[in-house]
Amino acid sequence: MSFPGLPEPAPGEALLVCTCYEDDRALWGGLLNETGGHREGGVLALGGGGVRLRLVEDRGWDHLHGGNVPALVPSGGLVPPVVVLADVPVVYGGDGPLLVDLAAIPGRGVRAPSARLGEILAALLGGTLAFDDLVRDVDKYGMYQGDGGRPAFPAPTAPPRRSFPALPSTAAALLVRTSFDDEDGWRALLDELGGADEDGWVGADLDPDEIDVENYPFEALVVDDRVFEDLLPAQVPALIPPEEHTTLVALADARTFAEPGRPLTVVDLYDTPGQTAVLPCSMVGSMACNLEIGNMDFHEFVAEDGMDPWWEG
Image 1 (cartoon, rainbow, N blue to C red):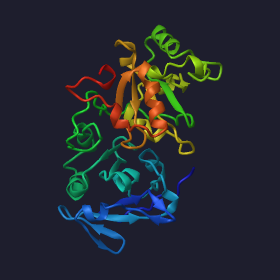
Image 2 (image 1 turned 180 degrees about the vertical axis):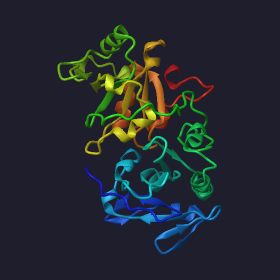
Image 3 (image 1 turned 180 degrees about the horizontal axis):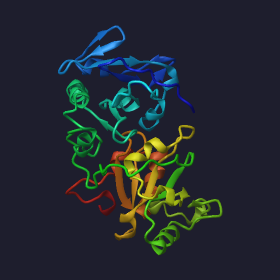
């Protein structure tokens, strides 16, 4: 799947892109009313800071995800620090719009309450609020200053050390090694996941009769390449090629080789790109299976600070 490039916003504007369509009709849900703004042609003027959102509609952006956005921004022109998406969770879930970072770590996202969109964008565009501030103050649903409880393992906001190449394109999941200090630990992890086959997959050749449905095997393409050393979760969404609907990316990072249960850091690619869930490697297969069939949402696997995680319940 390829997407058309995004238009360049006028000075003082940000883009509000519709990514959900039905019969070529843009679906905004209740967002345009919930912001408290008013339409001026193709612009939504928001109070509380004078922010103007250019409404961007084209069926070509149907199912555009936050991680895909940085590659669609025109180069050499005015690059806004943020693009706002009205996506499926907005239209059908009543969630707040997705704010996509284009400045600090392009492709990561945070949801904002619709009624506060003008206030939050004014602070971002005016420089009194950084995207890192948003990320540090999200709840388990990825909502800025939401009331869903704080994640027990917040996504790191450290500046990225460098850029990375694209990850492999797959409709399944990826297991990406980002820490290379413990070779024995890495081999033990692969063994615990069933061992990697000659094509670089774990969990792909298991006998269905031997599968433990309580600990569903994790089927993933293994990426064992030092070029991805120190890859941050927030950088992952922008590295996913748009051709396939990758289920999730699990990072084998320093925590994996230092803590019991060999926990993996799983990265959300869709609802709140860059949000993380940390859980034992034996549980990631169940997570991938439930996400793939739409039985559960990413936030249901995010451990909440001060509460026992679901897998210990």
